[in-house]
Image (cartoon, rainbow, N blue to C red; front, side, top):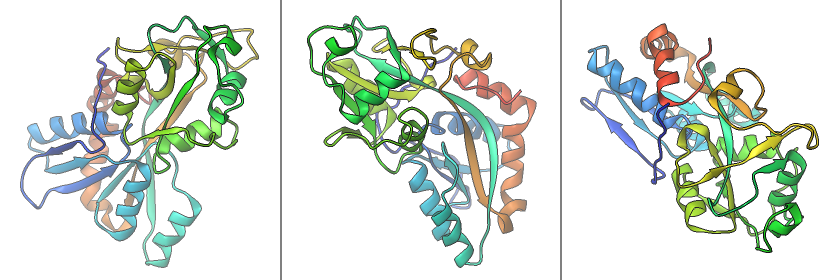
Length: 270
């Protein structure tokens, strides 16, 4: 399975002229949509530009009309939907793939297993030293995505059960930055889309049954429904623009497009 790491908050794939359709948003979706766009354009089906920045950035661009498609790793919020409607526009949601979220630590860390409750404690600040979870006497350095990230929102809701992140948590502008920081910091921990994981970090086995069963974050376990931290990935567009954007979205949902989903390291819909 191909693994991908990006170290910039904005990565751009630009083919064609200024008439290209614009796709903007989630850094989690970015490697996948970049690859889909690359194949789509090589086959002469159309022209697109693809940029990251975070789900919130994508929705903001969709609301103001500066992008044709917003990539998102979370569903649109009520206030974002209302802003669209207040402008006489309606957002349409399409699920294009699923993504498993990996908890990563520095390779030198001896801890391999963590429960959901322990992860909540670490990221809320109740657990501050690795010795509290069976590791060395070493301060925990927790890395998070920025608040505009859909991954930030998803982790808070599904892992932290909507508890607040601890004060002073280190917010990173992009997923690749978390991989880089965790790989260079002995006491570090962070969360990233599984497709971004490299040999420079160690993946944690996670338990959602209070420590009875720990599951390794693999594509096979995610597909089988064994690994618990899995989410849908979305493309959003304005309903009135459907005729313009539908050919690309249909391509992503096609057998060819879903094969690319698997190749890049995400989970195909079927």
